[in-house]
Length: 625
Image (cartoon, rainbow, N blue to C red; front, side, top):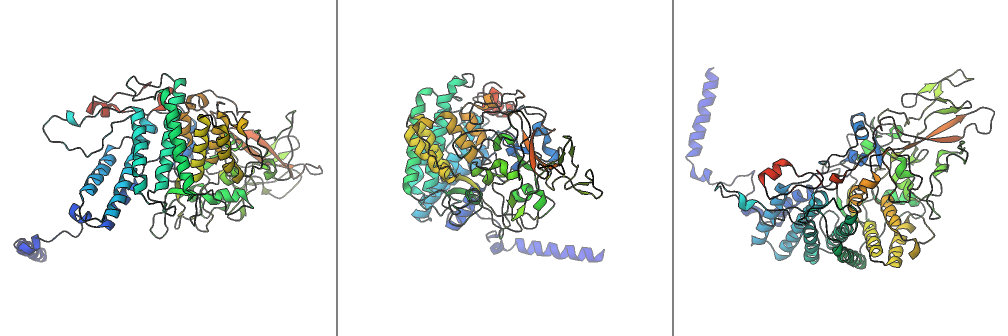
């Protein structure tokens, strides 16, 4: 007890002495950076800007794997996520975004940077342009999800008068937000570095790519919004006049072609002898990759890594007992057309419905768009130099199946006495999480580096937000919408040649269906499907809530696709016959897919909460909610 009192007395003496030391009180804190200090140093300003970059909003990414199971691209092979396929009435709040705190920080940054006097002019100009880029991107994300929102371009300050009405802004028109995004990109593009080697910060190329995308979205809403007149508000907060469509498409084409003319970016083509592997490598190769325009980067040494590969690696070749969560759908897999430019479902049965037999599972997928095997891990394909073990069991001559309920299960086959493997170490096994329940695993963004599938290592593969192929597709679509089909065909052919097509499309081939299809297969698992379907006003048509069969017309944009289908390979066990050891396929629906997707008219724009509207009565609610 005496010791405790003694220590306390010493502490009090020290505190009393130090509080009388004026020099001590005048010392600057060592753990806090004041505003004055920050705006004297480009390096410190950059740290603030990095934080703003790090909060760049997105719905789907490699950090949010399960969001890819929300539509018809994939099945979530994880027990905790099966509900996504059981109750697919999309919630009005699903892709909500209303982060005006983030906006305030960007407005403060712009205000303080503008007033800074100790930064060199070059640094100051770039910082301001980058902050304006991020602010415009924020508004682009807001308008995609919410429609027109309050356009606030300065940090607001409450005066504690008791009257907050001067802080209440009404929603701008949807077109006004798109106009702001487009005009900001034009205003800042020449203040940003024109350097394609800069990938994780804003550049001139990124400003043009963003402008091209935003203008294309606005043009689509203006043109196709007439198909959903209920999805509009009288003040223009939702909906864009059809008369504006042409100007937006012209702006999108202009920005796309200005970026193309820079000559700084190119389609990735380092592996021309294996175009599927080339396409897969596009997303993992960070060395002199001329296709990537804007990325979120990850670094092993910094401790900032991604677990996409751990979560989605094939279980049979996994470096941990992890993986297999995202199973691409047959809906997506059959969208990849044949190399003769025709669409076709997979011919796993003949005209009478009888099984067709294959020497190996990959034979069924031969002669298809090279992007298929670059996007999806197919049965019998390889990952990290090992053959993936996807097969559902043995098919006997009496048409029954011998399989198991766990990875690589073993049983005794008829006429034998020793147990042997009767199902793949990747499944598929219905209801078994992490198995390939659709018959497929995802390939895109999977890191082939040894150790990337280990919890202690993880992966540093980046997430690409903008890439050159999308810019080409944007140019093609804008040209098509402007009646310039020959130009559109030329752009589409550039992307398709990289996918292995040798027969060029011509003007007569360019249709809306062709535009929709090309984006679906090129940009799968890249955070595009929701926004594309919304802007084309196709979402409620394709995801219409009816329990439809798998489409037989994968190249038709309006075909419904409301349930996840799979395709399972089986080994044939028929000793003494020519079919013994061959393979057949069967179409399935995972048992956890119990409800079809239903996209309602109210889903085109997300919910503005009662709390937001109560705090600001000038905010009108979105339609159909």
